[in-house]
Image (cartoon, rainbow, N blue to C red):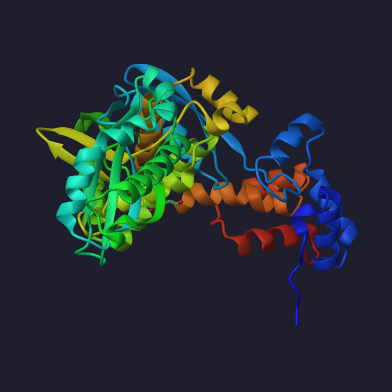
Length: 440
Ligand code: MEV
């Protein structure tokens, strides 16, 4: 039987690489040199990346693309996007330009509240726990003062702590549900530190409480952790214009607007479509979230939960035509930071934030929501007119050309040929083969 490796994390980086290469590759030297090719020549920079995570063996590149011309609340932004999928940056840029010529995007942060919970088991009378919590509540604030004083200086801190009785869901299950304002930081460390202190305070005060019996005194804290569901940390982004202004070379604006609204309505009522519709929105959101050093998994989890808040998964964006005006908007939860975490560590994140002119967290929420809306607009515009394959396959063609290491002369011939022929992987390979007259 295969054996687990022990002590892997203690090996040097070189030895980790050798271990992988010898165990999994028929040509170990090739595997080693591939990994090393992706090391940065600047040793300091490489060390920085090595230390972001454990067992780093090399860097994994994603392209950083730039989408210019985003007019948001009257100001132009050049938006950084880290993403591997072809067409996303091109689509964002196109949508940005389209709306810049029609008044731009409007974005508003509706609220910025973050959430954290201490989950615990209390085997006793709910009314006694409630009385205990109400009497001791202020101590939870006092005993976290060391943690909160800096955040308070910045205008943030703990907003409130409430006791929730969840025993209808799980026997003896209660929680301290706390709300926070974390200003320009995403606040995960701040919130989790406060919660762990709440847990200590809760356990100690319960132990000392003479009104509790032994079971009640021994309440059990199961865990203390922030929630990535932030339904009160919402940003709204929108565009609108007269239907006639939607006209372009190819489309009748009225037909286009109606078909577009219909496409959004389908995503509102049909979960299979809603998931793909929202995936298109996340193409824009994740790319900016990643480029600005934020946690895209947290954002993804929170946004999809929000899309299901009615009990049914639905579209994150909405559209209507009213009195001849076409409007298209999105409202999403976004817990983002522009200070702390990776924002001050990763040189490209610093670059991205500087290019966005050092936004506050609220401004970044607006930019990210707009990127999502723009992406959704671009996708629906293609889907309801030409279909998406036209644009996608053009980009795909480039990738296939690179894959087969086409010469400049071959590249020209291939591009010319596929101006008037449908691109598919097989068709491109066939054509390259016919050019080279050999099997590739
Ligand atoms: C592809 O990455 C995204 C789309 O499927 C989104 C959509 O269907 O709306 C084009």
